[in-house]
Image (tube, rainbow, N blue to C red; front, side):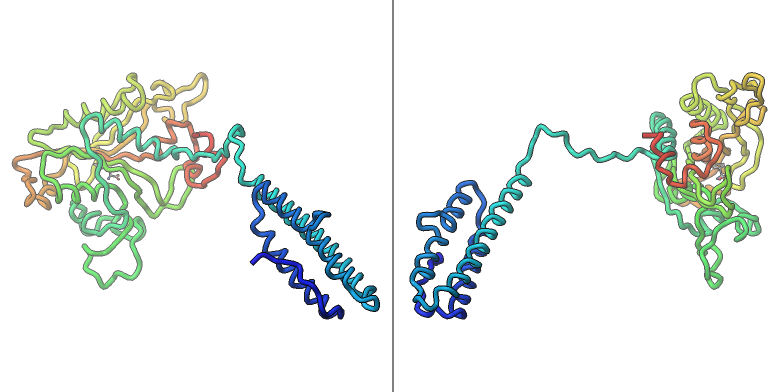
Length: 369
Ligand code: PHE
């Protein structure tokens, strides 16, 4: 029921006060629903209009009707109430005007721009390398960063006392002494365990690349980090030869660093490949001369060659662990390789401090936006 100004029978200050309280609470309730321009006009007129607005009615019904002896006090009460009603009406009108401004949208204003993040230079380099192999028909496989000794070492033909199996060089999880060695957990030291994990799941032929994070117990400096990134490759089929390995990697390096680069394979050792090699690319910074103008070329240490990855033919002992899934070393062969993504990204972007990648400094990262 809409509020109407009552006629007063009792003109005592208490009675006037009570009536004033009821009036103000009615005003409060009505002001809430004032929204449109039309509402505003109706609201203002109802309360303030000279002719028959509520304030005028108070004058007539309360002040003029008061008996002579009460007039003085009623007059004071009514004046106070009038001032209050006026200020409350104004406030309610102003508030609804503000709300209206807020909800109206000016579609000609420029939108709110949110800065879009950029691909991290390491992820970008990783995607680029993976892309080169995808074009050759390779699929992408992934595996866990927390790995068992079995996958990280045993099934990759690491001898029981290999130094990498020591906490000096690898980051083992704590309190596992009671577990059998093969079940002990560590942060994988390379992406090679995913070779075994994938061969357990998929039968040959197989062509995969495996990007991911790896960890080693190295203190951080300009060229070391306890966490870094690798991309592993594995190709298994009948008749895969070292020639296939060389041809594939030579193609990949030309795709990554430019068609002018040369590759060089030098004998090396890994427990899980035989024969094994380290592959170098001719320095794409100095063009292989070892010099930049009169200065020595730093990235290749003046040798004209940059070491990029380790590789080799999959050792038959590794296939023995997955023989049950079609990997009979008498019938199939394969090659594998593993490269450090962070180092390649440093070379590509001409950085001399590996730590820049991991410090999260926006001024550094923005340059790759
Ligand atoms: N896993 C080796 C490393 O981290 C690299 C590698 C991968 C070597 C595959 C040969 C074959 O050093």
